Amino acid sequence: MSGLEFVTGSLLLVAGAVLVAGAVVYFKVSRMDSGDKRELFKQTLKSVFFWLEDRGMTRRYPAFLTDYDEDFPKLHWINHVEEIIDQEAFGRYVAKVNALIERGEFKMIAIGPVEKTQIGEKDMQFAAVAEFETIEKAMSFKNHPDYVDALNELGDDETMSEKRTSCVVSG
Image (cartoon, rainbow, N blue to C red; front, side, top):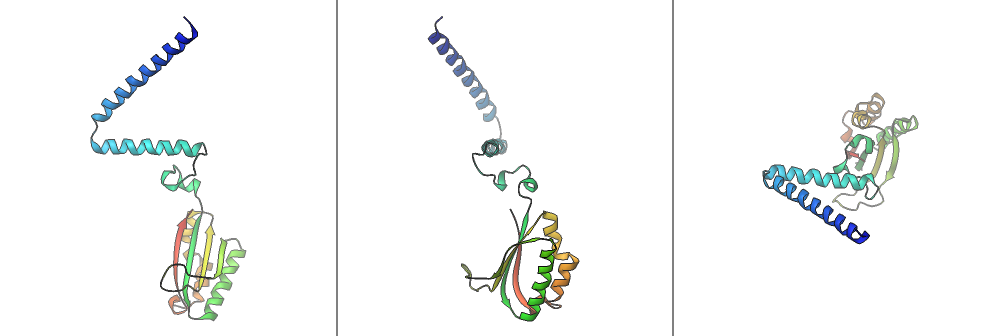
């Protein structure tokens, strides 16, 4: 048997095995109900993305993470201040928050007056992005005794000193 005959025979054997495997998969899938087919498709697609991500061929995306907390452990608070009504109270609040930053309670990524409001009917006056090391810390920080003390600088009703939106975002 020559080398060419051996390669040709091997290719035919592989092609036959692929054909048989394809037929088995086809018959198994054709007997599944539509819900099971969707689930199989979804799991197969996830497997392809995991394979690509594990080899660095694409970036990890939250929808395909096996352990979200491990891959994206940090959370951010994003605050947009629409209006500062009581400048003095807001200044005292910021001073106490700065003390928390200096102590390492969280990291301030960006803070300051808004240069331009890109989208929205109202111009924002001030914005801040804070980063927390863990999900738990970010979600519970609103109740941290020293942060509550800082909030108290804004008065019994903080909306009387400032109007803002605060969001928690992961990643």
